[in-house]
Image (cartoon, rainbow, N blue to C red; front, side, top):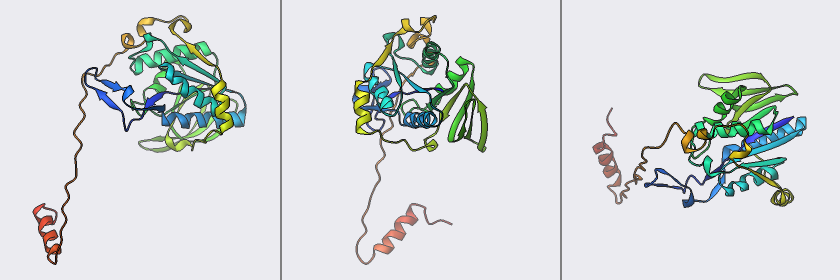
Length: 263
């Protein structure tokens, strides 16, 4: 069984700042980490490998520092890590991103299932999984919260929709996007981390992706862009301490003034 996992390096979303000059995330303003949803994807792949055997290939697109994402995946039982790194890939929206990732997947070759997180915490679009499925012409199994069974040619899973939970059986090859509820990622051991540090990470540029149209990469291939970014001011709560024997009456009067006692 060949499982491909798509993983991304993202900034610490609680600390990251935005650049008013470029209308983009200032990725240097915060530490970076593997997208949390992608840890669930790697764990799902690891569980499939443990049951069915086979290999796991992890692909990431980003700067050289994104090698850390691939080493994290190798520490969690991935067999191969591929970094897509080229200035031509920079500034990509999800349309250009899926074009690049799909081209890389075609170069990797035959697969049974592609697993990715439901979304990334920096973009929060959820476009990549469906976009990859569309570009490769395979089925999409989205918003999976539980994998019930995996066999050599199909998977049975629970998918979450606005109408409720669905039990779905789907044949390979397919793209699966997982929610945070799909599993609880295990922590790699020290031995596995040391092994991952020595692992070879393949770096592919645009010229390694075969017969492609370079105008579909990066900013040139992006159909959307950010016009402007506004960060709303943080609202601070007002506090008042009521003391003395008349505190209860003061509280009632304050609530009444605020219109909270009506009706």
